[in-house]
Length: 163
Ligand SMILES: [Zn+2]
Image 1 (cartoon, rainbow, N blue to C red):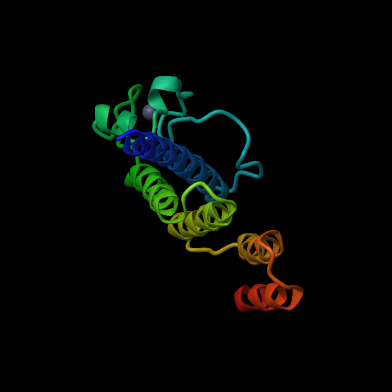
Image 2: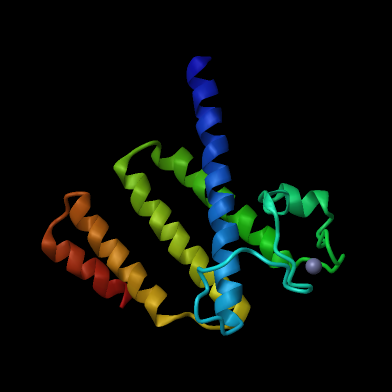
């Protein structure tokens, strides 16, 4: 019973972590698609009215549902992509946590999932798969091959597969 409670507790926090990451990546992808030279800087704002969003506007999934997908300040619809990115991040981290447990290998797949989510969101926002993200994907795979104890040749072959 205790083990099941611990698993449920960890699953909850993995889903929260994934949702927060999904929200962050969606925000960065949207800013990047809009031509913002610093997509990781600055506080979150409403895409319609520009109002700075507070903590209660930024709780992944719940803020969207409580506000029925509308901005608290101007009432404009929040893009569905925001909710989808949060749910996708939560589902990815939850599934990976259940599959790999708390292990070093889990770190590899978290990074992999985050990069794939970032690629999906930039594709959705601007129909572009940035080369930098593709290179990061290859580098991530190669680095984790070494970290997880695989050989040099296998690491290079894995990186080539993504290049
Ligand atoms: Zn607004």
